[in-house]
Amino acid sequence: MVTCNIEGLLEAAATKSSRKAIFKEGLLDTGLLLYPPGQSTPDHKHADIDEVFYVVSGEGTVRINNVELLLKEKDVLYSPHGEMHGFYNTSPHNWVVLQVKVKVN
Image (cartoon, rainbow, N blue to C red):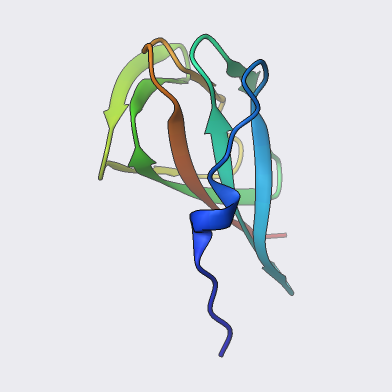
């Protein structure tokens, strides 16, 4: 068993989004997505990765197959492989999202 306290990972760059790795083992990869206000990850998809996203703090917009959803603290989203998705911090505060990736092929 391995544990990690994320407090030291929460500092986001003021001008760009970033990903801070937490655990990577076999087919599993976890990390924190940090989005300062106005920052984003453009729409994209993964052919061989399923993802789960949990909003740790803040809120922002996720676009899934061209449909926009507002995600806020404590929301959870599942994005299966092959699904187009993108993240956009449209709020005036930092948006922190826990990302869990599992390779499926």
